[in-house]
Image (cartoon, rainbow, N blue to C red; front, side, top):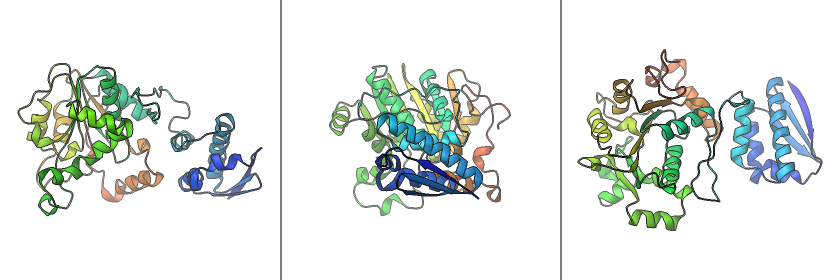
Length: 337
């Protein structure tokens, strides 16, 4: 056990440094397992030696940021934690901001894996991404689609999800078919609404420039000049996946994302995402990206929960058995790591 002390030249900096309701401080404390107290401009950190050293480095870095700019966002705290843990302290990648046309919302990759993912989407007509909950699979795909729409690289955005229950039946949900499907499509709309003003979203949907539909409604269509995202793709069957991928028309992009450790298909039904990743390896123009626990950017506990469920007591997990060639970065390299 050890202890260190950090001095604030201006005690009023503590409010910006600690964040609303001490949320920034809580992130550091929970992630590193240290005790942090503050009194009269003195921040005292105690706990295991290595954790105290990391926490001190993080708080020093954040203090410098607050001193220079007077502000500190939760994303910057999460970035500092990731860097201190060795996940990009000397980044070999550029966290290029996505141009979504919203001055009040800045979006950029926060890990090396996320940067590889965004680059793969931009440089390939079709991208598959597999990763655990909270690693930005859907969010970054939607942001890249909004960027492409704003730049007039595509004509419309189509957001697609399988309507597969996780332990509940659609028949027990109230309302008509549209109301029953709404909970399945809601996560995609939540992402859009964070990036585009509500009035503009309504206008774009009325003009058919943004479309949010269940996977079953894709049959028979050809989508030209479209950016099409299939979310929760692990819950598509093999036949549905083939149907979806063959909807691709001229000038279109497709992103397929999912987590094959969370398949909700009936027992004995193969996941179309797993099948596609194995079947389509080596086809030029298709990229495969694999994100992992280190790319999780939700609450720090999410990373620990994912690691616990994927631990040795549960076996290697289905997402560790996929190999093959990769058109981008670290996903599915030969001799899968």
